[in-house]
Length: 380
Image (cartoon, rainbow, N blue to C red; front, side, top):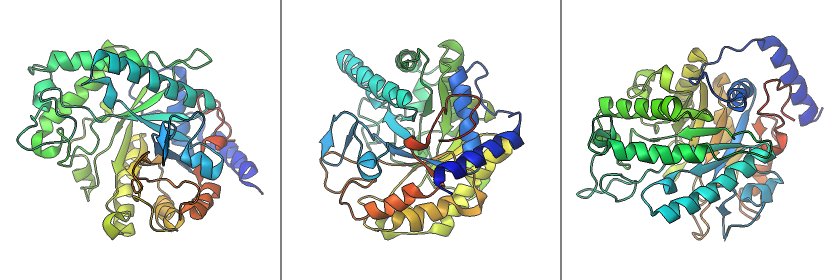
């Protein structure tokens, strides 16, 4: 039995068994397509996982701006099921640059939606108070979360930045005239020290206040109803209590996730058991609370291990009956000979990546059909 027939049977049986779905989605006024995506990602996570790649269609290893191209597609024949973009260019730049960024991102999101794929947006947010980018620079950066929260000196400026994001979100209409849903992942890796919103520079109370305001303002004031909100610390936790230390509450989060490079081979440090333990904390929380869960960032730079895809990543994802919606690997730089996280033709891990692609557990764009429909009876 081939992959297509097998999973159509599984999907139909799952749909019949599940029946009515009680959603943990926080926006009760979400668009039909966004509600369908939430439900279908939840259902898919019970038997398989979407593969995602950051900036997959904008550029790749040695190229940029080519139409209908991605390194993943060049190896497998399919785009990744999910494409990562970034809202970094929607603030901290000139108005002309911001408008150009909007146009580029709009085309990316709409093209992905029209093909049947999914978009997730990270936000490398330039510091709105010290104007020095998103990384923390000692002696230069300001601890700005306290400034952009309600009542802070930069709060009104922050509202303008969110209005810019909202305007973009309301512009991404597909060929069917519907808004493309986006998984929005703000303030990621907040438990680290490398971003200005990191734990050493932000109190728990201020972080939660900014997160709650961000969701409420976008959803309730600006009427953005095509976002799914994802909460994703780095891998610095070992218990559920530590994972939830800065959690803003179930009313403000649709998806729980984790970014984890350190346990997956970075600097030669492999710790599969630790990766499974942490990821299971994320998955278990999602299951208990009807939230989506995901491995929101991972990867191995340069992929020097030729069997990393099946012997490291896939082994972790298949462990402990975890329910994860997607796994995202980071970008392939267009100029750097070593900064890439997905294979390209001729790269050492490409044969193993094909095995990863052909495994029935992994879902790529070619496998997705009607992900934005409520009556989703099959992946293919």
